[in-house]
Image 1 (cartoon, rainbow, N blue to C red):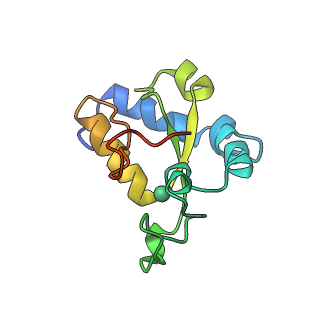
Image 2 (image 1 turned 90 degrees about the horizontal axis):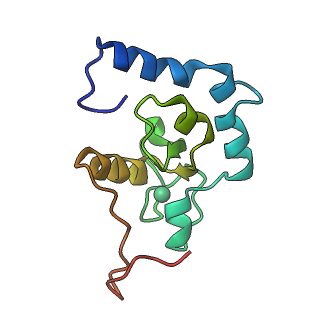
Length: 124
Ligand SMILES: [Zn+2]
C-alpha cells in the first residue's frame, strides 16, 4: 500500500485489485515470472551485495523475519494504470531499498542512487 493513498477511494480500491490478480501473483503471473528471472535485489547487486531478501541493504543479515522478502517494484509509478502495471519495467528490490525508492516517488521525483565515491549514479 502506498502511503498517502486514501484506502476508501475508488482509485485505491482499483489500485490494490491489480496486485491480487492471477496475471500478477499467480503461478504464471508477472510478479512470479519476474522473481524467477531476477531473484536478487537489483540495487544491492549494484553495490556488490548478493541479496535474495535475507539481508539488509548494507549486506548484514536481516534480523527482522517480517522483512525477509523481495518486492517486485514498478520502476515507472503505475498509479493504477493497467498498461504500466502489466507492461512497464520492473525491478526486484529488498524492503530497505524499496522504502527508499517509495519515499523518493512520494516526493514526486525519481532520484538515481549516487555512488558516494564519485558523486555520480551507479553504472549498470
Ligand atoms: Zn537491496
